[in-house]
Amino acid sequence: MRNVYVLGTGMIRFGRYPDKSVPELGAEAALIALKDAGVMIKDVEMFACGNLYQANAMVGQRILQQVGQTGIPVINVSNACATGSTAFREAYLAVASGMYDVTMAIGVEQMGKQGLLGGGGGGSDPAYSTEGRVGSGLMPAVFGQAGVEHMRKYGTTLEHFAKISVKSHKHATKNPFSQYQNEVTLEDVLNARVVAFPNTLYMCCPTGDGAAAAILVSEDKLKQFAAGRKRARVAASVLTSDPYTDRDLTLPDVNTLTRRAAQKAYETAGIGPKDVSLTELHDCFATAELVHYENLALCGDGEAGKFIDEGGGKHPDLGGKSPVNVSGGLLSKGHPLGATGVANICEVVWHVTGDERAKARQVPNAKVGMAHVIGLGSACTIHLLTV
Amino acid sequence: MAEQAAAQTAEQPGKKPILPVFKLEPKPHLVGVKCSACGAVFLDTKRLACSKCGATGPFQEVQLSDKGKVWVFSVIHQSFPGVKTPYVTAIIDLPEGVSVKSNLVDVDPLELQKNPGKAFGMPVELVANVVAKDRQGNEVVAFQFRPSAN
Ligand SMILES: [Zn+2]
Image: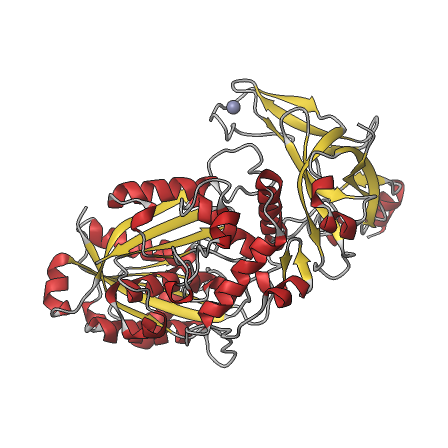
């Protein structure tokens, strides 16, 4: 496999864009990424487009109908919340394999005000709908229970989960791309209404619209186009699905596939968790972030609570260590499903390359960044980016 | 039309289980299938192959115990229209080595939020509750769990 570099990135602020279409949002991100890369759409040889809610509607091609119909191969990717990062990985593989030299990945989503309650169901007669009658299969229930499982195993407290939300909101105040940029106090978080125990409103990510894009290139093309500018190399690109574990079919196991992906990513890059300067991980709920501290080996098993109490996950400017979600994370930055995976790669790239767009929240001396996404059902991606 | 109407009235509305793994006769119970190669038990009525070991069977239908223990839970405060909140959703481990997800009833949801430890390992038993009426007028019965003595 060949070395692959991220030549350009583009992202629009996450939020609500009711007056724009999905292809328009994607096209905006594409144009920013192309400009950042210093290439034209005619230079792009292959394009992977991640989108979930219009997965049957050729979003990738419709984006090219806005930015340039060059006739290149386009694949439309859908992989739950890992949709964008899976698209990025397809674009990465296309270059790594030697097949193409310049590829593009876009993640784009428009969710409007729809809540996170998608995924329930039943037969055509609603009398046989199981949701709320034989438990809950919705995201808030799954991640609530993942948190409760940690409480059961290790005595983790509500304050630990709440502190994550306070931290991420604080981080978001430095990120102009974030949907929410307001601070919250520990009391605000603990006293907010409960959505699904133990997660309160501020421990659940908002829904919204957004898009992010990346241009990937081979080493030859990097030399041709980068012109001495600092660019990140993809040191690992890993995708896993959920292996058989005891309760996975009843309560999706979000841990095992993340652990396997992390182990594989560290091995591939030849580094360990201590070498990671910053992590953007999939904090769809505060409870998710806490269990992933351990799953990604940022701390030992059962030590996530202690890690938080000692400033783990906080930006170094706030006196923290092992910074996690300095962008504000899904909790503040937002989670337009298909866009998320590319957006967190953008964030990591900006830190390791010293990009202007992360200036206000730059992690000092960032050398390696990790981007983690999990899509329930389940898919996990981990990308390590380095300079 | 007349024939259809006649056929419908011929079948008296009764009770129907919410899912095929739930049997109402002779008394309400859950069924599973067991992989003969590795022993894994699935909450299912049939399978093409085992997702633990990959064997294509044979699979033996097993009657699952109506008693189990709570592994974890959450208290749901926000749901679809028509779903009464707050309620407790829980993962119940059955002695056959399979787990089941359902509502935990006859408990105080807010009390469990204050003392989550009370639920961990709590012995529970299956209870059959009517949760809806379908278009044919049948009562839809769901399996749920409630605290039990052991
Ligand atoms: Zn088996």
